[in-house]
Length: 287
Image 1: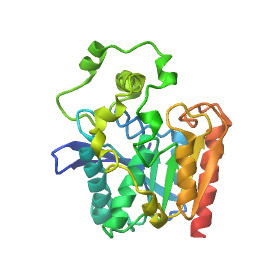
Image 2: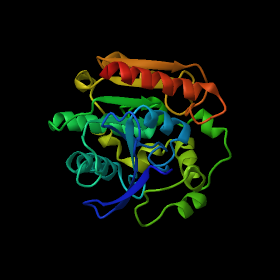
Image 3: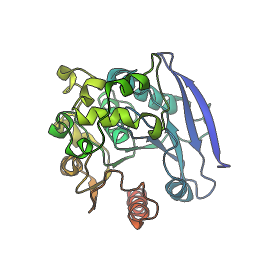
Image 4: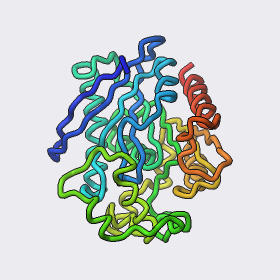
């Protein structure tokens, strides 16, 4: 993309990250969408958002800043969350000097595990009296780790060929991983869901509540738009339904499908229609 700039960031943990800034060239709103990718916190890449969706936001005047973040199990969940928080603060404090932007007004956007990251990080931002986002976009995300589906073997993933321990050992590095395409690490996620070890890759059982958003905190969240499929095999639809019922100014776009990342299939109209609805909702928030 001609309007793409890539920035480097060295975190307090000495983890090297890259940040993609996609700059809008028309109808500029001076609002930046901070984007966190999905991948179960085990895989994923900052530039996974298809161009068709990126362009929809850019055409409406929104800039997009997409983040790397460290992945488990090389980095534990506490480190992942610390880095995400640090990245948002970096944007807030350096929007002009580093990114040459005129405002640090921002929207948090995450898909799947990225939705989890923006929700739990927003909670921390509010509690620390940091400038909070104008809005949140969460696609098939979740705010808690204590869902029964996350702690029991997945019927869906048990239908896949069994992933062996030897396969997993060859995937795990002795250094932090921040950029892992699906074809390089998806087996790790399949294994985690097959034998219900996903939480163990992230944190200890006693930390589950610490890494979840209290229901009472959701009432302080900014306007939030959510979308999820009713028969999502990865993240239960009820997670998004719960959020829509507890965040005061929220909207849930329901997709009647049996897939997780319903916006991945660019040949189907569902994804484009959902993003158009999200953008219309955002426009109504700021009109």
